[in-house]
Image 1 (cartoon, rainbow, N blue to C red):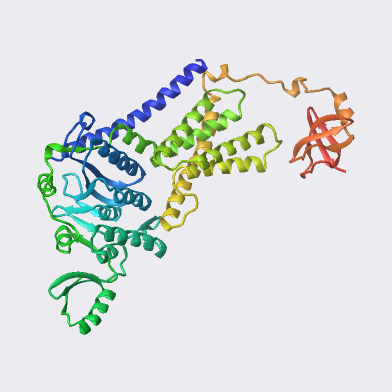
Image 2 (image 1 turned 60 degrees about the vertical axis):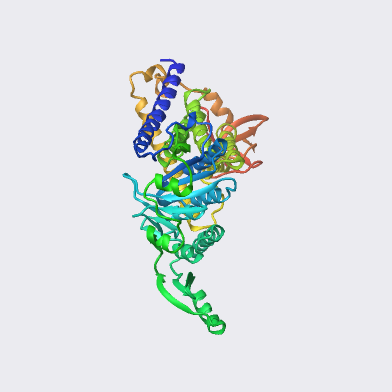
Length: 514
C-alpha cells in the first residue's frame, strides 16, 4: 500500500471522526428544536428582516458560547432587529466567558436587550452564577413563575470539589455585577449579595416608599432620618450575612429587579410590544457545534497526543511523509479552532514555531540532546497551553484553575503520545506487511562484518587532538587536521580541550581529557 493511499485513509478517518461527533451534536440541537418559542421563525437563513431575535443560552457558559452570542448579535444587526431576547437557562460556567458575554451584551446601544428566564421541558429553570451576571447585563429582566436567579459568587473546581474563590476574584466579579446593576437600574445591594455572602441586604420603607439597602446604608439612613424628620421602617431581611442570595421570580419582581413574570413567550411578546411573526430564533448551527467540538477538552487532548506523536515520528525519520502531514493537520485544527475563540495570537504561533526549530536543530545539527532540545519542547508545550486560554499570566483564582486544567490536558496528552506511539512502533515490527518497509537483514560482527579495518583502530589509538565542539558526551574532535566524531569517557568536555584516544571499536571512538 503506497504512501498516498495511507495518507488518504488517515485524512478520511479524521474527517469521519469529526463529522460523526458533529452529527451527534447536531442531533442534540434537533432535539432541542422541539422546544422552539411559539411564533419564532425556524429558518433564520431565509429571513432578511426581523423585529426581534431570540438567542438561547442553555447549559455551561464557555468560550464557544461567547463566539455564538457574538455572531448572533451581528446577525441581529444585519436583520435590523430592535430587540434581543436572551433565553437563559443555566447553572453557570466559566467566569472569564461570562464576563466577556456580559460586556458584549452591556455594550449594545442600538438594540434593546432582554433576559428571559423560563421553564423548559428539558431545562432547569434557573439563571445562577454566570447566568445571573449575564442577566444583569441586559436592559430588562423577565422571569417565568417557578424560576430563580442568584448564587453568582465565583467558585473553583478542585480535586476536593467546588471551593469559593479568593477575595480578589470575588471583588472583581462583585464590582462588575454592581456596575451592571447600576447601569441598568437594578437594586445594587441585591446584585452585591448574589456575589458576596458577607453583604447583608434589607427591605426598608422610607415615608412609605420601599427601598433596598445594605446594612451600612440602612444605619446611615436611620441616623439622617432623625435629623430630617423622615419615617424609616424596616421590612424583611432579604439577604442574611453568610449566605449567597438567590431569589425566585416573584421575589425578583417584588424587589424591582425583574419587570414581570410572563409564563410564555406569547405573554412576553405582548409586554414588549412586538409581534410573534417578527421574531427569529437564532440557534447554534453546524459551524458553532463544530467549533465547540474542536475546542473541547476531549478532542483537544486527542489532537495534542496524535500531533506530538506524529511529529516525533516525522523528525526522527528521513524525508517527509504521512506522520508530518498528520502532525500539520492536528496542530492546524487545534490552533484554528482556538483562534475562532479569540484565544490564539502571534505569541502562541511564534512560541510553537521557535520551539519546533530548536527541536529540529537539536536533533539534526547539535550533537547529543541538551538545552536547545529541552527548550524547544517546553516552548511547544507552552504554546499549546496558551492556545486554550485568553491570558498569559493568571491574575485571578479562576484563571489559575483554567491554567492548571490546560496544563493537565497538554502534559497528559504528551505523555500519552509517547506511550501510545511507542507501543504502536513496537507492534508494527510484528505486523505482516512491515517487513516490506523495514530492513530485515543485519551484518553481524561474529560473521566477519566490520565497519573499518584493524589498521584504522591502530592508527588513531593513543593519538592526541583537540575538541572542535563540546562533547556531551558525543561531539567532534580534530586529530592531525582530520575532523572525527568521538565520545567523551565519563565526563562532558568543552570546546578546545586537549584529548587522547583511549578506545577505537569500529566507528566508535572514545577519548579522555589529557
